[in-house]
Length: 113
Length: 111
Image (cartoon, rainbow over all chains, first blue to last red; front, side, top):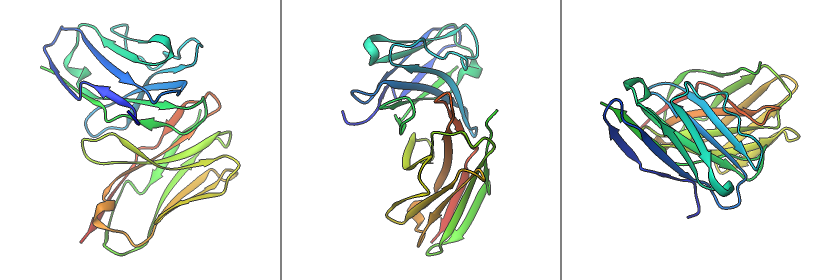
């Protein structure tokens, strides 16, 4: 596709379960970001991948959160043992390079019940 | 530490008016500044990107300016329409290539 694609668009999960969120960046984009946005709040940085460099994980809120980017393309954000406070919209963005224009996906709305 | 502030937090104007949204940042060492809009329950749509060496960018009824030395950017919307109603976010790309976000301006255009 032409844009950043995220799946699923909505996910409802029970507290304590693990979830995986997927992001397909725009083809050729070397930079990939994950953010989350809680209801009525601003964007919270989670993790940043740039090419083959070690990712910037400084925004991950706990060790229950992890992310991978395979082959420099698709990224998966994994949340283990989900808690209700993990409920938010998880947004992924990609850029052609490190300091270039960012394009966002439509997000995954995660609800932990 | 870079901080980004957007003023006002909310704005409601009648249709047809021209308006200005403000964004300020504390550290002038930026790569670029990007304006986005976010519709309720949706992702972010990129509106304009201004590189640090540029002064302004235009797209249709939108014009964004950048004064890096004073740490300010404005988004000018001409002849506003109800479809412009959204939350407008500005983000600066800092020296670590991170996007640093403002809290947004919620804009309502009244028909």
